[in-house]
Image (cartoon, rainbow over the protein chains, first blue to last red):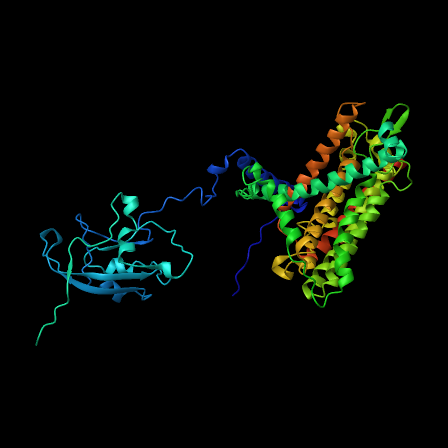
Length: 187
Length: 353
């Protein structure tokens, strides 16, 4: 059984072809006039470098490694994000540090190096999901570009300072507590 | 003017003639290039976009993106001028000029304003004075030559897409020319002559005696055919990105491409000047039997630019036709309509109107 397609019956006015054309022209002219009297800044187009869209909540932009108030990194170098990363762009080297600090919740492990290859990162947010300490966030910055490949390799201090300026925090260049040499346990 | 003529060791008549040629053709040329901007900005507004507004004059003044014209011109001049290896080089070079020159030449007979008398000498504001024996047959004939530009550009490129586009375009232009001629014959018949001055005089200064009111069907047919004649949407069969790449100008780049584009816009200007002259009273100012010369020029310009704008407006309103629909429209609808128009007006004249 076939499907009966109902065709739209054209009136004689439509079949002259002139009237529908005039109708269409009136629509386009309406658009023209409306845009003519709308300032450029108020039209739909967001003129990118001058104007920027409001970034919605939950947007996954450039990463930030979160810090405690004293500037210590929240990351405990558990490698969960590195495991979760589908693009394999995170690489971490862990280290130990001596002073047990109550404000830091008794951590004694932290990343000595934490680098993300921004050329590989697909901004999927899996690292953020995987992190047990809420130490890595994907935030609203999206203008990640550079002139060469090397500067797209973000290291630990790059990642900790990505939003420092926007949040009004100081730029960090070193951990508040020194690390201790790796202990070798004699078995 | 006499002083200028004696300085240049020529007669005033020659100075006036050369002045007219330079001013008229230069302004048509400039209008055509400005119209590329109008097209881009107008289409942007129609489609709720913004259009070109980033190019700055001397890196400072945006002036609504008008400096985009300069930027484009400079860019086109300095781009590499590629000629395909298998192309017919001579014709490949010749084609843009063959497309461009007839488009401008058609403007020669059109009076841009009222003739005036100064120191006992009559000055006509058209490049070719009235009574030259060619009248409005000339722009129609020259318009027919525009086919050669498109077809030569297509054929000399030695490219299948180009050939397809060129063949389609030439078929369109040739078949729509018949509709144009039929519609125009009715105008000539009613006005009793094919000189633009006579046609304009016969229309009078009252809008309801203009031929658009007296021959609305003829106007409709003529205007529709002009879209096909100038190769513009909805009848732009010389091009067609979805079907034949860029059509006849696929192989063209740099200034040659720019010339082909300018040819289209000059053709558009000539076509709108023709519509204004034939159906909207040319330089006649509504409700003014004897307008001042400058006002008549302004009136003509307003009419011409309005129709040039309608060409842009329609382009961004209507979708393209299919090729068979186009031929159907041209041969089975517009041609009979223009014939009916002709017969109707012949009958009315025979009844003594």
